[in-house]
Length: 100
Figure 1 (cartoon, rainbow, N blue to C red):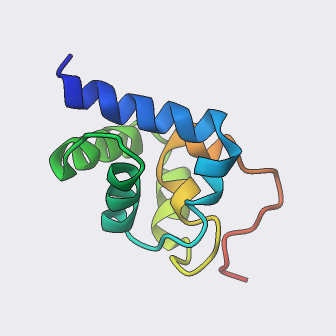
Figure 2 (cartoon, rainbow, N blue to C red):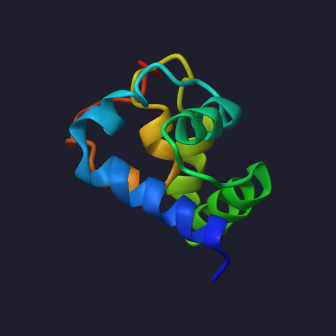
């Protein structure tokens, strides 16, 4: 595994473990912002690595989950959490997605 791929995995896992890092995801509304946030927190990964991982994670989801991710409102606080399965697992049931 490349070092930066390791860094992306470390970022994802750190968000799961750290309330402070997770809270920083709430205002993010684009993949570019998620990438920049991770890099600002000291995790060295590329746009390409994020895109590849995100796409692979998305393809592993059911079509219903894929659709809910696509339809989630980027302005809703939970949007960034919905982008990866490991982060979605952090959301409490009933968190909503801003589509109501």
